Image 1: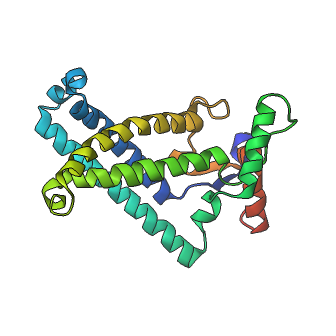
Image 2: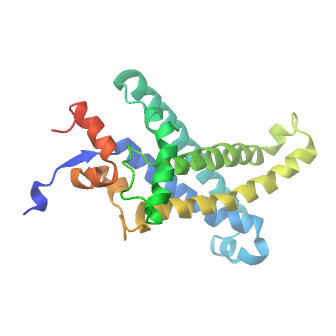
Image 3: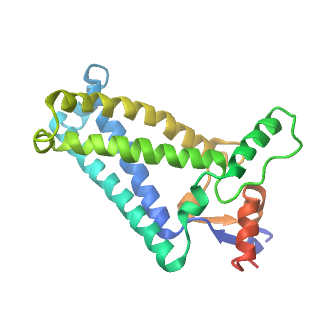
Length: 230
């Protein structure tokens, strides 16, 4: 009965939830279909299951296009929010002086030197690093190199052939790096002690006020000041 009276606040909108799920599934498909292309001797059995390398390549490209579309939708969504609703996403994720003091406070707390954890806003400094790693690695480096590899004959007119060949190695190399980032993201979102075994907020968009006050107290204070939570 106590749970029925528990209040919740919106952490992610329905559009954000849908985009996140779509993006996550497309990234998973990109890993499954992309690594066998780069490492055919070790993972060549995957294309066999998928009826050959041509079909595997096709699925990989479709998943890449879907991921790029989710990125475009995200940009449009937050731009419109900033213009019409004044909910500035960058206000929450841009690095701030407080993030550096939070890092020091976190280190002190982890090693038993500090008495309490820092009070985070909507996103902690670790979550901000996670956001930027996704933007710069998955969004920019893998996105640009993937588009070039998807349409090589178009870009060969403006890019020297030796650079074109290097994009394959760049794409594969940063794909491996991105796996580390995804595992870090998965740990923070679901496997950390605060959320284990799974955090449902990204699936329903809602977080209990009690949990928000424990993990993101500055964010709760901010939205209370704005009259969002009573």
